[in-house]
Image (cartoon, rainbow, N blue to C red; front, side, top):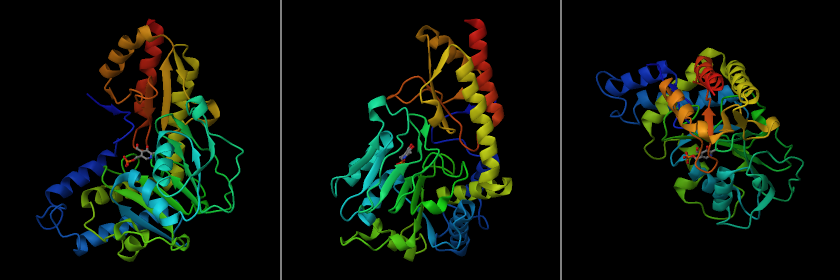
Length: 353
Ligand code: PLP
């Protein structure tokens, strides 16, 4: 049976990417597996360099003073690393959900953090707007897409200070002026590859401004200086990410995938709005195109609905435990056909009920 993976992450990857990376585990270089060749060999250094170059190219940041790194420790380590490298006196954070809150918690190890705005009072179902970013602060941090609550920043403030953004769950999914950002980070496991590596894109001139000593492994400059090879890199995760970036480039880049993502999201949200059995969680104007969160109006239908979507080959539709209900994650590699299958199940439930 064809499976439709709506999981919030680790996510669906293009089939052709998985086939190629599976083959590379068996034989990459004259009978040697990708995961047993030296990471210092030309074969792997080329992969790392291609992955870094492709990331910058797709984001439109080539030749603009940025460096791309593939690090370990997940996006969660970036919560800490950003503060270690950038926080001298105080930083401003926009609190839009669980992941922003976690980023704030880590930064608070170093100093009081100023929350420029928060949507916690409404269960993080919207994106605050119209806040001020104090220009005397070191940086402003935001989360572009809130994986758990299903909200997405549609516009970004004009920040008078460096802007740092956690793009873990919508990187490479939509066109943006990425030059607005000074640091972008994203765990690979939504739109890029398997868990195990995190893309960090840093504008070099924002570094070197804090007075503290930064441990080597936590210092962006260390990783930039060593071409993202300071320690043994997660070769499988980097290779698979590189293949996904190549796949995206061959498809026509972010602009091309954005059109597909818009179609998927429109189909999904129009069903949520038109079908009286369902209700969207996030306010309409801030709805995420990656993670659609919704609930059943009548909980008595839960068992029937759960059986129906599972029988249709759908996986990973349960909402996060802190929100409940359902969450349809529609990352880049999920096809429009998969969304059609889910929408058909929802319509069928309405016909039956
Ligand atoms: N930030 C966002 C927006 C996320 O969705 C996640 C995980 O889902 C994280 C950070 C944490 O990522 P990691 O598990 O790679 O540390």
